[in-house]
Length: 67
Image (cartoon, rainbow, N blue to C red; front, side, top):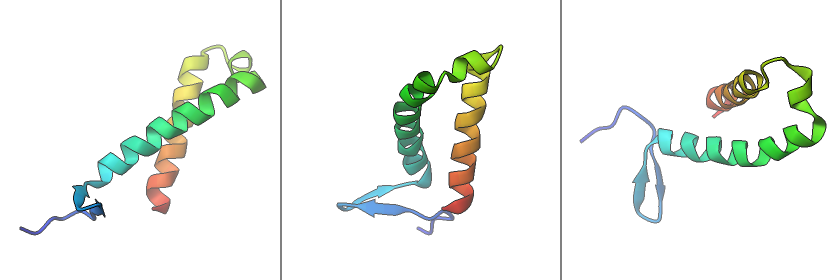
C-alpha cells in the first residue's frame, strides 16, 4: 500500500506527519507561553489570546514550510 505522504518511523512505529506537527505544536506552546508571559506580550495587545494564537500559527506554518 503506497502512502502519498512522507512518514516517519521511530522504533518500528509509523508516524504520519501530522503526529510530528502535533508534537511540535505542544512543545512550542509549552516553551513559548512562559516566555511570552515574562516579556509582557499580553500587555502589548488588546486581544492577547488572539495575538498569541496568531503567533503560534505563524511559527507552526513556518515550520511546515521549512520541513
